[in-house]
Amino acid sequence: MNAWKLPLIVAALALPVVGAFLIGAFLVGGPALGFIAGAVAVLGLLVVAARQRPERSIGGLPEQGAPRRVLVVAAAPVEDPEAVEALAREVGATDEGVEVRVLAPASIGFLDRWASDVEGARRRAQERLVASVAALATAGVEADARVGDENLVQAVEDQLESYAADEVILVSAGDGSADAAAAELGARLRPRFRQLQM
Image (cartoon, rainbow, N blue to C red):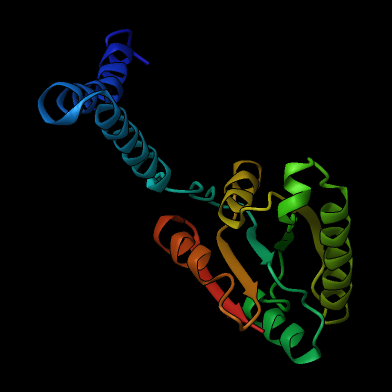
C-alpha cells in the first residue's frame, strides 16, 4: 500500500465519528447525544465494511496443452448411485486425460469456531471425501481429494491457487444452502462453473 493511502483511510474512518460526536454534543443536545451519534456512525461504518465483498476474479486460465482438470466441490456427499452417474457424465469419465479433484469444505459449528475446535469438522469432511471418492471410483472416475475452508467460496479460491482447473462443479443438496455461494462463484470464477443439486 502506498504511504499516502493510510492517512486517507484513517481520516475516512475518523471524520464521520468525530463529526457526529461534535454535532450531537454542541449543536443538538449535549455530550450524551454526541456519544450516541458517534456510536451510530461507528456502527454504520462497521456494517458497510462487513458487507463489502471482494470483486476480483477467482482462478486463472488453464495452460494450453495441459490435461483437462475438473474441481468437484462436494458441499453434499456424492453417494447416491444416480447422482454419481450424473456427476461422472458431467466430469467426462470416459475422456482420456481428465484429472479430477474433489474438495469438501469443513463445516464448522458456531461454538466449535469460537473454541477453535476444527478437528471434528475436518474429520466429517474427510469422511464425506472418502465416501464421495469411493463412489466416483465405482463409476470409473479416479480422483484425489482435499479438505477446504468452511467458507465454500474461500475453499474454492484457495484450491484454485494450486490446482488450475478448467471447470468447477459444485455438488450441493437441494435445500438451497449453497445457493448464495453458487451465485458468487458463478459471478467471479474464470473457469467454467456448474452446480449440480442432488
